[in-house]
Length: 170
Image (cartoon, rainbow, N blue to C red; front, side, top):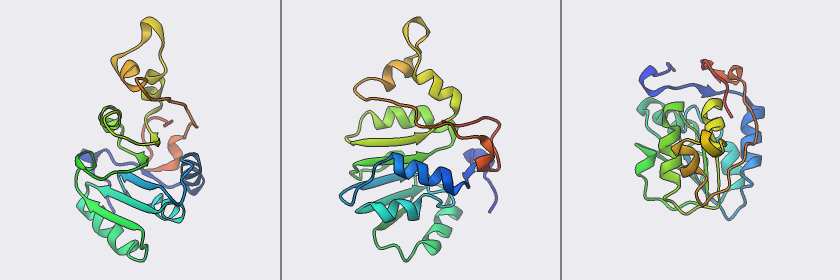
């Protein structure tokens, strides 16, 4: 499977990091989880083990088709192809490891939705902007902290991705 440069794909390959993400989401058997960016699917089975239902949306046709074959035995999984930010599905938990270029869009989109928890992995520098205070704040700092509590869960080194990005994640 080749990385699509235009999509900014860097696939999470660390099972340890994937498990940490799912644990941090505190998913219960009553939750409907929305994952935007199925990728190679490292989070899918872990999410399905805990959630009532998982909706995973992938924009890359080849990755979507691979996921359909790979996860056809998961009864609580709905896979979709398309732009996840256009979904009308309701969800209680949002989990995503998006291309870094989609981080701002993800936060702007999430702030318009009703959900209880979200775990979003972003470029470390973007995460640092979210926590800026006072005169150093950016518009995304103000926007992202409006009506939601944001906390940093962990730093993720670039070696946990294939191909590795040039920067670390948070």
